[in-house]
Length: 284
Image 1 (cartoon, rainbow, N blue to C red):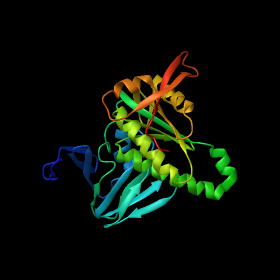
Image 2: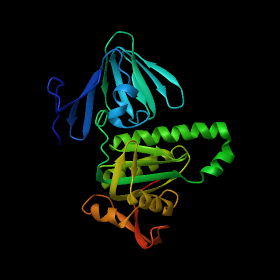
Image 3: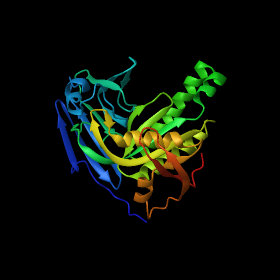
Image 4: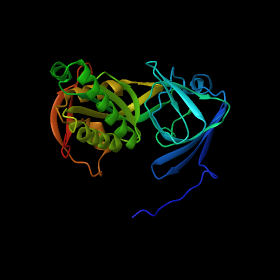
């Protein structure tokens, strides 16, 4: 059994400084916690945006405000305000700024690992997870616009909870689906399994595909052949299935994840048939 650990922000693992602010981070095993300090006049779009290389902040933030006031505007134009004692859950796609003359301080749980980290366009090996809702058009017709919108919001909320829990990075939504990247295939597959269970409780099902390959991070997006391969793997999945590519299955040798052959599939546009594998203990 792992022993309890105690660390202190007096001796952080990393300090990332940026104009009018900084974030100090501490890592326990696989969890990174941050203390954010932002000076009066700080604004994300001016002080962090040029570092991140994105039009708006694409980090999912979960934390608690210790001091000061933070104003936030989403990409959709909604405005919010966070004050001491507020526990916040902020999805990607927003600008933020410090209000008043008091320094803002917060403890950050979800976004600390990547907040204010520079975007360098580096090519890296990553596991890509792509999901979509099965029969989304039929659900929309059955429920109507308003109820479907509420269900989709619940779906998105559950997706982000699980992506964050497994240390993934949300790249984009596709209306009724998500693209996320992970630093290892086991995390991606376990995240897909957890998502299937969580979404199943909403009365809908997803299909999911995982592929591992080299991608290039550019601002708030990723590109590369691996992204297209992941999309083709996901499109081959049946309702409630998690499919993985042969490459991913090889990398998962020795894990506690079990797979069975899902047969040979012609991945559209990629010019060859490939054997895909089904996660057998997945309960969607």
